[in-house]
Length: 65
Image 1 (cartoon, rainbow, N blue to C red):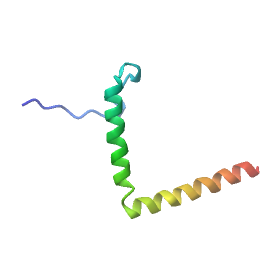
Image 2 (image 1 turned 120 degrees about the horizontal axis):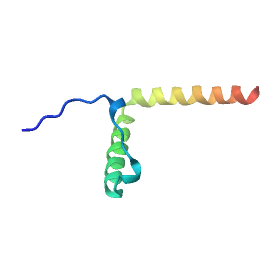
Image 3 (image 1 turned 180 degrees about the vertical axis):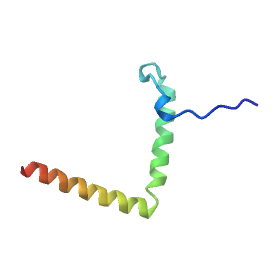
Image 4 (image 1 turned 90 degrees about the horizontal axis):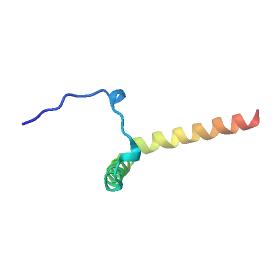
């Protein structure tokens, strides 16, 4: 059995121009499904709503100056 060493995320590089569409689609489906399941958690959703309100408040403050 082959094993792979862990690589730091900073060391990973993907050339999106050479990524075939079917692979890109598969990655997107995986990420979207994961994010969707993450937001099923009420604590995550509440934290997102708090963050969104804070961002909106900051945006309004920046527009006032």
